[in-house]
Structure formats: structure tokens, C-alpha cells
Amino acid sequence: MRVVILGTATSYGVPVIGCRCATCTSTDVRNKRTRASAYVETDEGPHLLIDSGPEMRLQMLREGLSHVDAVLYTHLHADHTAGIDDLKAFNARLGGILPCFGDAPTGVALRERFAYAFAGTPWIGLIPHIGFTAVDAAPFFVGGTCVQPIPMRHGAIRSTGYRIGKFAYLTDTSGIPSASRELLRDLQVLVVDALRWEPHPTHFSVPEALALVDDLQPEHAYLTHVGHTLEHQTTNDKIGPRVEVAYDGLRLEL
Ligand SMILES: [Zn+2]
Ligand SMILES: [Zn+2]
Ligand SMILES: [Zn+2]
Image (cartoon, rainbow, N blue to C red; front, side, top):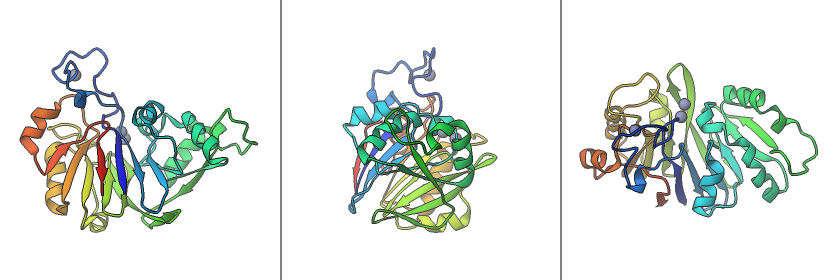
């Protein structure tokens, strides 16, 4: 399977508008972060998009990606869903409804905010057509690919991580219940939320993410949903080499 990390920023994006800090003014392209998202192409064929943030269209164009068979939503926050209107490009390529998966509250929120995308009117190319399936902790199939949802805490709400084969993607989490941890053993690559060094009520800090890596022992781990207080190289110098800060456009082969 192949993975493309489409975006690695927290909700503000990096650079932050108006900020003159060392990360926001850096010329290192790895410090230019769009909102968190990933793309997975499995050996069985399906092309899976994890979240559709506000820069989804630009991320797909930047990476030369053109096909999505299904979208896996981690949760309902706008930095993970606001690109929904641009999903119509994949309806056009599929010639029908785009299957989307996520927990039940995410489905309710998407239907409220983007009711027109669920209207079921004949498709004439102007709007996306979403078919939403609510998932909990039970594995499900997209095409021939098994997807394992990972229930997580994200401040006062729940979020969903996803495991596909030996790859796991856990953005936007402040806690992973023990039952979910058991679904995360024997990983080749773990991508996990780490907003900043200091604790935060709704996200893992770098020390919390490193503690998870220590517990799960994946072969390699990457930090995502990264804020501007984490400059790429100086952070890597402290946490590497087994754990690194992810960057937009990072490609992984598993
Ligand atoms: Zn987020
Ligand atoms: Zn900054
Ligand atoms: Zn969030």
C-alpha cells in the first residue's frame, strides 16, 4: 500500500496568518503545513481519502492525485470537513454517490452543515453526492480493503482513528482507551497527533505522542496536526530518528 500525507497542520494552518515566528517565516518547505489529511492507496485497489479539509482540492492537485473511492472522516471539526464541496470531482469520476464513513455524530453534523450534499437529487455535476455510513469500533470493508476504526477521545467529543493493514492514522486525539490500543499492535507506521510540547485539553502534546509510541512500539512514527511552535528540524533533532514530524507530501510505501 502507498500513503501520501496530504496535510500536517493544526486548524490554523502553518504559517499562521500574521505570525512572524521562526516556523511561520521559515524557508524550509517542511514548515509549510496545510490542514491534516492523508491519502491511502491499498493493494486491493480502493483509494481512500482521510478527511476533506479546507485545502483538499489544492492537496490533491499538488500531489497529482485524481481518484477517491471513499472518504474516512475522523470527526466533525471544520478543519477536517470544510472541503466537502470539492468532493464533487470524485462523484464525477465515480459516476455516482461517494461513500463516506465516520462516527454517528459526524454524520449528523455533516447532514446539518452540508444538507445539499445529501439531498439525493439527480446528479448534474454542480454539487457533491455523499452516502454516509456510521461506523463504531467494528471493522468494515471498502472494496476488498479492511478498515479498522479506532475510537478515541478528543477533548469533550470522540474522534475516530483508522488502521489499514500495518498503517494507523490517529489525528485529533487527547486519549486512546485501552480497548483501542489493543487494535494498534504490530504497526509498521503510526501517524499520531502532536500539537505542541505543552499539554492541551483536546490534543496530544509531543511527550504524550512519544509515550504512545513507546507503548505501541511501531517500526516508525510520524507526528501530525502540528502547530507553529514545532519547527520541523529542531523538533526532529529532539525526537528522532524513530519518530519524526510528518510534512506535507510525505510518501510512504508499506
Ligand atoms: Zn483538527
Ligand atoms: Zn508562527
Ligand atoms: Zn478536531
